[in-house]
Image (cartoon, rainbow, N blue to C red; front, side, top):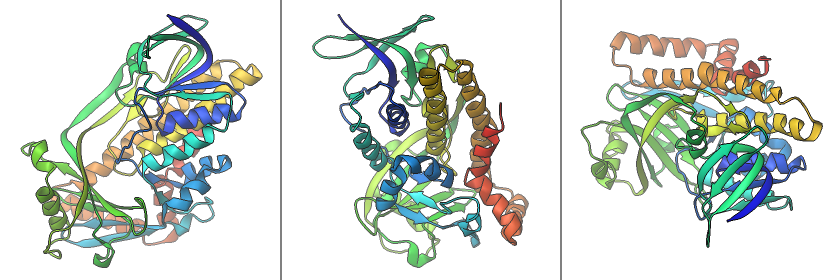
Length: 405
């Protein structure tokens, strides 16, 4: 069996894995990415990027590339099926807090080619597709990875390994790290249409509460303007996957969400159904193995925190790992990565995404009205509106992480 020695190996060529590799390569560190799939994958779930994420990606030139093809969303809405518009949030109030006072909508699978192309410009960076991780073990000095390859498997050894291989992470499982949390009982469905919702009063991003079936609306760029409208909804357990994936079901959801304002069927471009989890790894570091992104934490998509948080992981982790490798910094700095990012995920990402879901699906009439009153109060003046948006935009989460020592 062929054996190859590497400095850093990143498992997973999604946005978090590729960003980790790009940051390390930029710091002159030889890095290898291994990916089980034969090419970059298409994932239609994530696609909202918050201001601090755009700030972090700016020095790499990634933000400019994203903005060339993405949709800037300076306003988003809190809505209700029966009451209509509750609040429209204007992110311009954050103009003094961030260079990017807006959300950027861009499909995740359009970010990965940007990162991949940039990574290819570094001769000391390489990506191997169709190379699944089969086994992982480690000693005090190195990590060994048995990689599936043709015509025969390959044994890689590395000084450091970053697990960015998703919620079903082989790296995390090989390290016997518990993934604490739970799975939501209902499934989620994502569906897209070319039908334009803007004439019905919808901003490019809107969250509509409803005790029966809440809806999250997003206008995504797709391949060209005017793009697609995407809807995410919960699916009752009594409905089969096969039924959920029919155009009839999607049109039923669209018509209900527009509360009788839409009579005709609309063209359905994409449909999917999946399970949703709220979990955080018990450890983000085990000796020479570090976890980032969905390998370390997963959450429901309400608020757009998942991918953003994974990118924040990548930037924090690679900054510290580069200091260990290039400056001979104490490896305890990697424990700081774990403290900062795990704390933020437990106290911010998990808490806020769960709360967002509970608010959208609230059934008690009084609680619903109390929530509407709270949102209107928060939007009633610039100070309270700014504070609300500092949380929802994840600016406060970054500041909270940086305060942890």
